[in-house]
Length: 110
Image (tube, rainbow, N blue to C red; front, side, top):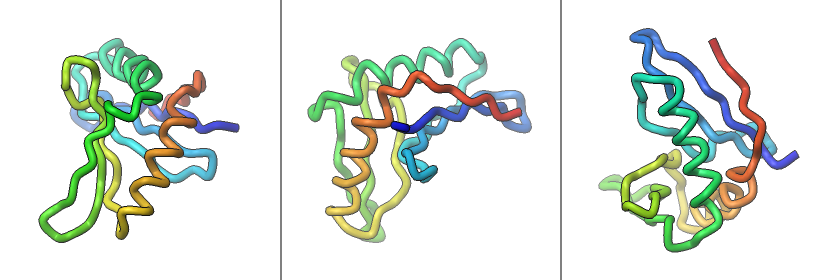
């Protein structure tokens, strides 16, 4: 199992997807979308871009923790990772995102 996407609808009716790794950990979370179809397009964008190293923007938060943004070809952020304690943990999460991001499985969370 490579991982999966969880597509959920929030209290205010907006949609968001989360990419989960094979161990169930969150690898990437999207922004919120007004329309379900837009969130589904975001998932497709992850599938398209997750294999390209140049699409990963490696960042350090003001508290010294590490995270990354996955960006589309137009430089828009598709999703953001959780915070990681070390650069090595961030790199491991990027590697996992490359694998899990190609998943075709989408689980709807209502």
